[in-house]
Length: 260
Image 1 (spheres, rainbow, N blue to C red):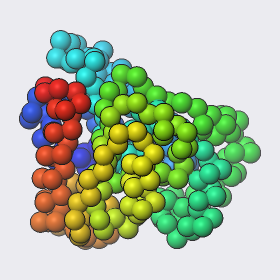
Image 2 (image 1 turned 90 degrees about the horizontal axis):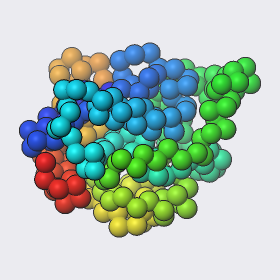
Image 3 (image 1 turned 135 degrees about the vertical axis):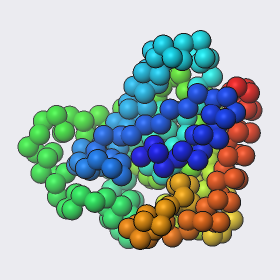
Image 4 (image 1 turned 45 degrees about the horizontal axis):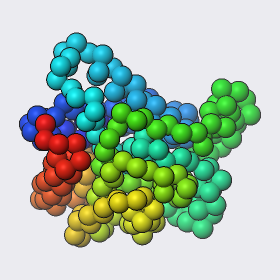
């Protein structure tokens, strides 16, 4: 959920940026997860576009936003989402083929989801719900939002689901940051091939033990007890990753969008 990235949003806001965060329906940490929210990933890009619409229409921000200088940031599945916003397209068959050889990865096993039997529920819904089946058929559509002029991606997921042709065609600046110890979305299968495929993309790898969850906010003591895996590096490791990421984000957006 968006609140997990308050450390980054507030840092950018302090520099003069207008920052908005998106919670995707059925696919974040607070509301109940749904089959649609957890499996129709490409629709998340539409959520981002609607959020931009809402912010631009909000009278509180009239005159404060330069519509020609809008950037976007996403972490993990959010990184995939922002690449779709930049013009990447999905290929479900390619993703299934990838998972056939990487069955242990969380993006293939569904371990990151709290929805039990997600795959079985999705297959049942495909035959019983015409609207769901229609959205599956549109998975390869373009969700490019031309208002977004620069994209920063943190520890991206689902790289094998994005077509090489669409990645080669991305024209907006893309910068990728990942941790050397990312075991959830391995660098070699996600951030590295994305960097090679996207023209001009830059990759910054933060030294070990920075990992996938290092880009989330710091955990409270209660959070560490309840969620030991995503909170396992909370503390100095995460703080160091945040400092490095904020510096890279500020430099990237200043170079691509201009200083706020």
